Image 1 (tube, rainbow, N blue to C red):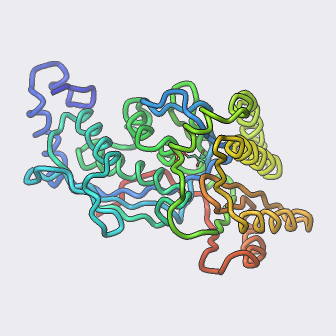
Image 2: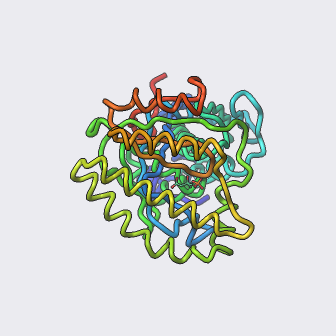
Image 3: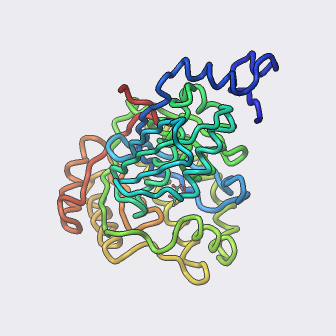
Length: 353
Ligand code: PMV
């Protein structure tokens, strides 16, 4: 077995074998179980495209907001009696999920652990609908597994090897490791917090505009865009300026400036996808209806800006004071049950038992 830098220092220096470090780990957490929550994150400056598919490194940086109310809760138990990993999502067995296995294998490798795990996960967001549940799912799984192995996830999230694992699970998942506004760096695929959740009274009104899974995964969509869209190179070239502008807007707490760059980044990402062959269109008619509602709000003097990801849903960035007005205006395009006012939330963390 590989003895990583995460093993105990005596194991690292070769005085103990990995099994001994494992026993020490389990002295620290006798039951080997932990539950973690990770909020979904919505990109304000978008990520679309990979520069290294194997390491899942992005072709562009990105900047996002982690939300409080929507996310994934996952319990991981390393169980010496198991002969194989077990995974349950929303009450349904999904034992052969390759990404879950890969993430668990990564944690086992870094932690010098060979026990199999029981994973029970619940999405508090519609699964595979373009509402970013893969990001919160990977972040919650990694944090729960890390803690169940006796590690401290608040230390691990600043560590390149741990973040690499999370990013391999889902390209946008590392952004859920921190709360509030978070940036993922193109250069090394690492993440850093930009502004904690309590620092700015933002709201994101989420309008769910379709039910059921999306037709094309973002992984496949990104590969098709990079391969066939004549606008892909222009997207990559124009992108850094949007990040610079978003950072400046955040620094100045200028919501109009941040909303404007978010809409521009969104439009450019979707234009680039629409020019793929065959075209990639995640929007539906209701997406456009919602965009009209947001444009109408702005014309009436309400500060509201819209964004869409790999799905038809519209997420509207606004100030706390305007959230209710935005929500009620969106009642024109979606039933009340499909509208939710969300707040900036904390980073992925272990929950007390
Ligand atoms: O993390 P992935 O592979 O699901 O990609 C997410 C891509 C977008 O949601 C469309 C944009 C983003 O930056 O979140």
